[in-house]
Image (cartoon, rainbow, N blue to C red; front, side, top):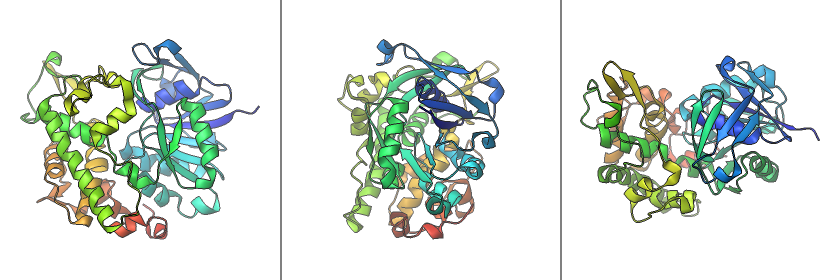
Length: 403
């Protein structure tokens, strides 16, 4: 039997875990497209100790080829991006010339407008070359690189995955491959907008970081022991801020359904219920939003990103908690809210606070700064400047410009 060739794009946590998981199986040939091929070993070890999968032992994923040249992978059946949303468009542009007919192109986590990016990059080839793009509703596991290019901790696996795809006639073929790769059941998500409107990290991170560092002047130095964990130390104020952001997403959902009641947004459920649904019995105390975070084994031990400085550490403002979650998370929600005429004081507050440390002005006077749209994932950037165009993405695909 000829193994199915897949290409894992990017060198992040999810990419490492994908290699460790899929590379275990003889019927899958795993390749890695990365800027740093010299840093990768020929095997990636998935460390399962302390996770619900501990009894399975460690995963050892074999790699066929590692390269920084996507031309080396011509003919691969599936390309899957594991990096943060703010690098997806760049990666798609790099791999597009080498994606062949009848291929699958997707991402571990289809937030940040992945569908709009694919239509922008591949254009008519989606139809003429039968290229099927797809995206997962949530990354298959919470995971963390242990040693770059060598090992990764599998912390919290999901009990099921949901996937949106552009060509439903290829669902069975794609889902079988994904289930082989991840060993988790895959179900169909109704549409890509559902994925865009169910951000987890992109609302959890800003709320939590703001709650912890809201009085930070950008200069104060901390000791590592002073910085709480992301989730196990989750407090009431973090939960309060997160609830505000989540409520504003639910307002977007309600307004869309008010205008178009038959559009399927059933998966856009409140964040508390969503986490319980995804992690199941790993959540020990389901009483409220705070306890759901504090007692979720799948969230254990995760640290807020800091960087070492003289005398201690500071919040790492170069991390994806800023550069993904704001332009490719909250700015998308803000754009959709403006199309719908909704006020978003919580989202505005989070963008305004974070952008101070990014030397950006994504919003000015509680409105999106149109001159910076090109640096975000906002649908207006792709020519989708009304909610009707966003919802009717199939009919307006030709309006999405090449970027």
